[in-house]
Image (cartoon, rainbow, N blue to C red):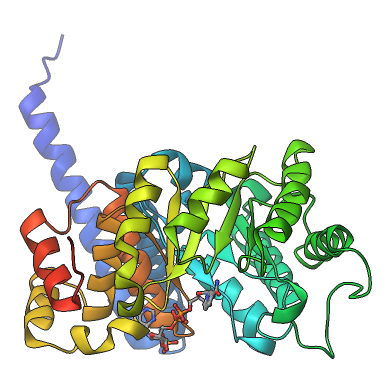
Length: 360
Ligand SMILES: NC(=O)c1ccc[n+]([C@@H]2O[C@H](COP(=O)([O-])OP(=O)(O)OC[C@H]3O[C@@H](n4cnc5c(N)ncnc54)[C@H](OP(=O)(O)O)[C@@H]3O)[C@@H](O)[C@H]2O)c1
């Protein structure tokens, strides 16, 4: 019997494999030199495999960090209990659909609008989220749609989305139906009263209609906007069966940044949504101290401001029209959603000082 030296066999097969490889390599070089027409084919193959590789590593990165755009879902974000941004759609007119779609593609999942054609193109929001959902293969539950009932005095007299001569309750009903139609949905994630009515009686009348939508399962959260008096908010809180779970306010110096109201919101588990967050803090964001802190955190002064609000547990509305800003902003949401503590207590105190938030 002939004994085979396993070492020898391995080295033999290694060398024969090695020479095979060498031969193939030589043949390829010769064929490329001899038949230059093959070069574009080679380039094509190389390009194809490069983009395949990039796609693979992107997918792998998303899998590992679990923060890929495909992974983001409004339901998951809300369940996480961590802060997020809401994409705001005011003043976008004909660009609304395109921008809403771009925002969702960038990673935004929560959208704010209003049944107020004067400032919002609600139907554009409907078109935009549908388009993005199709592209990303996501469902209605992955997106959060929030709209508002705007009373007659907030509407353009030439473009009122309900019958202005009907009773207040019917106006709310009609506005709500219009919103469902515009947003191409059978339910809303949140319905907000755009401003308190001129008296508490009318505010309560509107609220009772809101509660009937809630009871019918047509809306999941109720909220109020532009309410700057804590007493008024407490009055609504006490009168309501379904309590307000969102307050949407301008975040600015004139109201001392809603310090007391925000405290009440925190105690009652009400989500505080801010608008004018960047506009009202423009001066503060231009200071050297804020610029330095932003750089230290790998942020811009604007994204630092959003990080500040989210660290406080609040929800800024973000109405950017810029794709680059959308991506920067979503990157902060990702950092917060992954559990990173971007700012410590000392840094929060520092930012409050620069903004001029007064406690006490
Ligand atoms: N309830 C109410 O009565 C009420 C009132 C007003 C607004 N809102 C809601 O709030 C939303 C936001 O409005 P807003 O007044 O707060 O301000 P905004 O529309 O978010 O405007 C912020 C400004 O900051 C700029 N910006 C610079 N860097 C940015 C960044 N990284 N991310 C985002 N923006 C950046 C934006 O410019 P670029 O576009 O170039 O990024 C924009 O001009 C509205 O769309 C609306 O949904 C509600």
